[in-house]
Image (cartoon, rainbow, N blue to C red; front, top):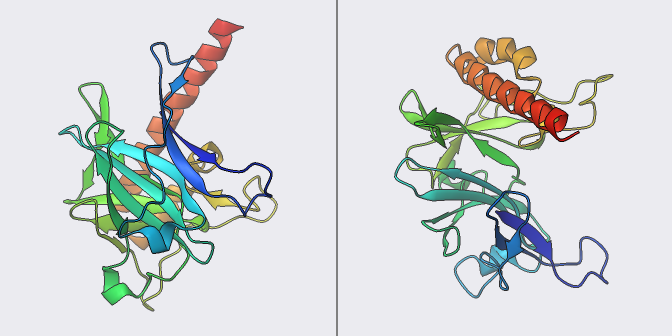
Length: 233
């Protein structure tokens, strides 16, 4: 398990630096953490983007070859940026920087970006990163939810609308439970995929299939959690 930790709890939130730690467990319930963080602001090529706020919001997916792909937020207290790193063992990571730094000649490099989920599939009982129509696909965004594609999982291209702006897939709905926020990676967002599949289909027909996949996976997880609660209590 990777987790986010902050230094100097005496400081108010917003004045601390975040690092990502590694913990392991034999039973999935009791974890032992390693003494030192595994991903953190260091004197490397990403120092300017990761200090003083640090590395936040780890989201991990695995390729079929066993490589772990970590998407996280670089926070320099000016602009939050989605970044990517890879590892074979979850402990030693190679940083590649902003996922959007190359897209459209860097047009969106200085735009706030965070919160992400890569589309996956199940292969031989293992959840691995999937391709949709020959490309990797991710949802991302805080408040509004957007999408992006990639050929290599390192450099990503945001989906744009006809005006050249980032295409909004869906946003908070007044009077509903998501009236304040729709954010990738939170169960409250994933559970409304059926509602939004028709919206996705209007934007691009083949995207509806992606949402059906996400919906099915969410239902499976939800049913498992319900069964687990009933079993324990």
